[in-house]
Length: 495
Image 1 (cartoon, rainbow, N blue to C red):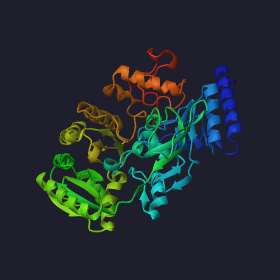
Image 2: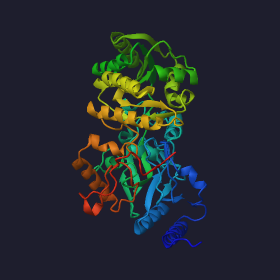
Image 3: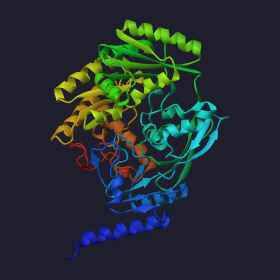
Image 4: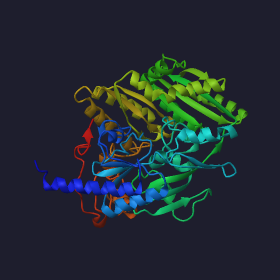
């Protein structure tokens, strides 16, 4: 039986692509075996999958440059990928494009204590930076809960934060310089070891751009001195709303803790069963607060926070008396996400940010939404900067539950925007929130964002299908392209 002419042409075109890519990245640098591609068909947003045309694994910035230049010349889509831990589908492949896997860019290139910075390749894990400098009394401040596996390149793509971002900032506040490659193969450097950027803040533009503007091949990040003293408090509350009110009260009193995290009853019980750290089980919410600095200052602030907690209705208080105990308090919080696997077959992690004053109202409303959708929600999040991470528990094997979880997630994100917040704090937009972008932005705002995208990527080849709900041709801004996203992720295969 003869293959249709269209299919023959498609196969010939694919063979041409693969031959050209293998000439740039020889040996085992190009993966096109159907079974082997399964390892790259999804990222941390595991509800959707799509096998790419091929995976390319370059070993040098010159190879990255040549691969991108070739893809630009033939109009081949490119999805950059690091550790693949994105929770918004940011590294979800395309059937008509390659995955540019940066897993071999995994070395720490330089540690400069005099300038308090470290130069790393993008697939160095977050925690590896701290591990590399801890012996000299330094650390890297941004610390996502996935820090043992997530990569610096991915942190830059999503502008990740973590539990200590309240005092020490997001990735953007700790990023000094980048080496990057544009879609036409141009290699650029932005920033460096100096603290003040010159001219336009392109570094700030690239951080959080979700792989739509360029491919990062090197980063210079800031390291800090490890604080002299670190102590943590566990405040228990009868209501989640009271814990939220306490967060706002602490900040209003002029105290800026290193971290402030809230866990509700579901999260407390799951984490305690998972790691056995001694969390109280008779409260509806735990507020975990860490103070750091010189010992006298920390002791003084601990007393102030205790008093504020009492005024806000705390019914239990525990203060760490040793470094081991402080770490045990955090062990439960850090394990909260994996602990959900013990109590639910699946969970959907929502990521939105709100003004701190709205925490009581939003937490109360999430409870009402949870009841109306018939799905449990575990709240565990960065309360200090209002970055919510409601975990919607569901069973994908039950018909309609995934769709209901998505609908509940969308309702929570719309609530975040309604109270003056935003759709994402650190997980990015990706495909997960792309069709909600017009909830937060007007069309003029989205058009301006895409003009910026076009300035870097004139053919729209880098990570297409992400972030923008309406796609435009760069040469014809204002004319609407095909996809509108009326059905969420209709163009992506479901698991």
